[in-house]
Length: 134
Image (cartoon, rainbow, N blue to C red):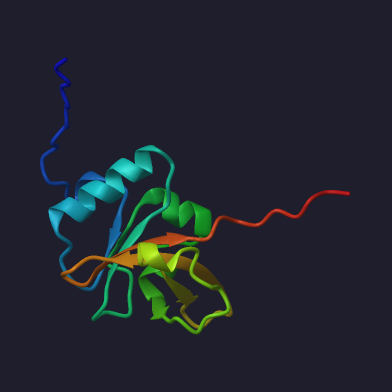
């Protein structure tokens, strides 16, 4: 039995071609692609780098889930920590907790990130919490 795998390779995406925000440093095309494809599935993702304290790129779903403007996302500061109250869901997967502080406001978002060998981070926010109605 022959199994065929088909992978669609898109041309590298540019910030102008999509609804992405981008700051700080250039982001490799493969990470842009990951964010674009995950956005199509409604999965909020952002990219950072271990050497930077800012978001490098985020998809539209990420901004919508956080309910933040592009200006707020550009001003956001990333703090990676293993000491945050939010414990890693599975340390074997290499998930690291992070906090995203929004500028001068008191807004703070928690999430998890995974780091690849070149120091780039694929970041995901914790899902929003909706208390049960009585």
